[in-house]
Length: 126
Image (cartoon, rainbow, N blue to C red; front, side, top):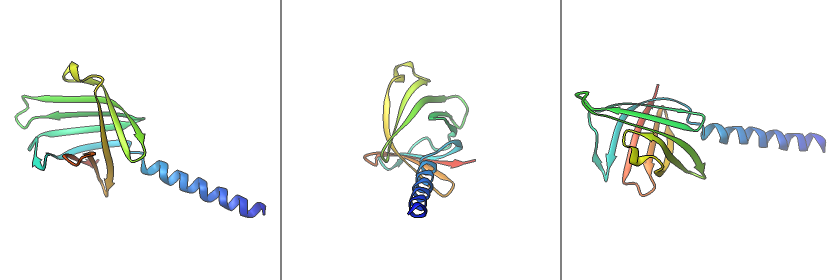
């Protein structure tokens, strides 16, 4: 009986670790594409995102280098939805805003999308 119980506990621990690692997006990413309402947006922009310890930092630069946008926020998970609450941005009026997104990993890509499917960003893990 003890061996069966130990086996069940071990399976639960392994499955829990797999779920936790699936939701762990920590890393450095390079911006690859963005679309709003199915239309490409920010084409040619350069971007980098760092996710670490439930903090997401993103920076974007225009192709000619004249514009820069940045966002820093806390990342929390509720089921398959992730909420980013901005703590610092290039526009002070955005601080405190929250965005609910789906976040999925597809190979070496992290895809961030709005719940309604009208917004999608693709980031390549470095």
